[in-house]
Length: 181
Ligand code: SF4
Image (cartoon, rainbow, N blue to C red; front, side, top):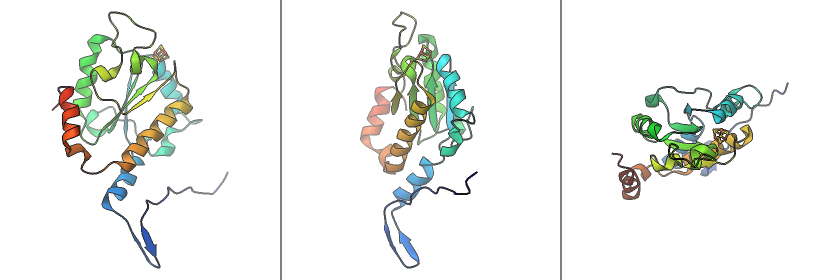
């Protein structure tokens, strides 16, 4: 077993002997990106793939996400995995509304992203009909590697997000377009 501990890269900044300076945005982004707490909203087969992603072989915990949260108030990454029936749409939205800012959303798999093969009267054709989505993971189901890549994309977003983004007019307009206050 290797004793090597891999540290995350420091944000860009200025350094010299005995000091390192960077911006507050970057320090907070680094902390947020490496401590995302996912809320798994799993309804069907893609949820099983997520279970494999959490288990020892793929080990989601390596990314600081070892604590799946089943309370929206203690989660900052909503992961929707599986077919979402239209009557579950309001529940997904309610869960999203109960999460505190900053929050991110990942649509895992074809069903959550677009309804998948279920182009029917009863299936929501993508969760972006009810909540804004940050990252879409394709596949039916996606492999655990793809789910991990999706998480890494969310990490990039979190790392590079301005602290002012959530108060910006554009973001408020995005929420308003979903009728979310
Ligand atoms: S995308 Fe495929 S694997 Fe995932 S929930 Fe839909 S049917 Fe199941």
